[in-house]
Image 1 (spheres, rainbow, N blue to C red):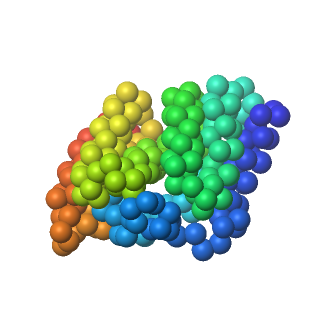
Image 2 (image 1 turned 135 degrees about the vertical axis):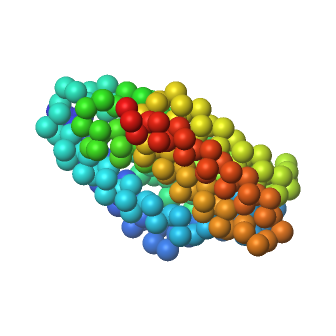
Length: 229
């Protein structure tokens, strides 16, 4: 029970973290040695509205989980670590894109562990909210690497977008296929990829839009298969 309560407290802290940095709208272009103005690896701004659903569903999950002290035990330690890191992410992102990338990958790894340990029962309250959270992190983690690669001059913006959108697709396909359940994981990735396509449509980086769109379509089959389990 103490761990279940901790997960609830951390879920609330995570949801409240935007209050620490009101108005945060992403990295400032000048936070990078090579300023990142309108980088093609990023999704369109509307995509970040998914955080509202993620926050609320994670809190609801934690409240429901108070009645499941045993069945959810395996999932809770890793989820607690991921949420604790997440509660600090926005203030760190204001200071350092490098540390923000490190932390978001730590959030992803621990969220993946929690997702694979989520119980097969109570799916709408256990695996599905964690799946939505982890799916978005899978895309966001790759975006963070794309921003660093272009922002530190290791690649052009366009090359970084192709490489790391491609990485997001491969990672998500692998996770959804291995997981073979929890369709909300794939749904969050599809949401992110479509937003990347929207961001790049009718621009000089339309090829990135097509890559993201093809990836979104490819994710549909493993996502639908996972919904049957």
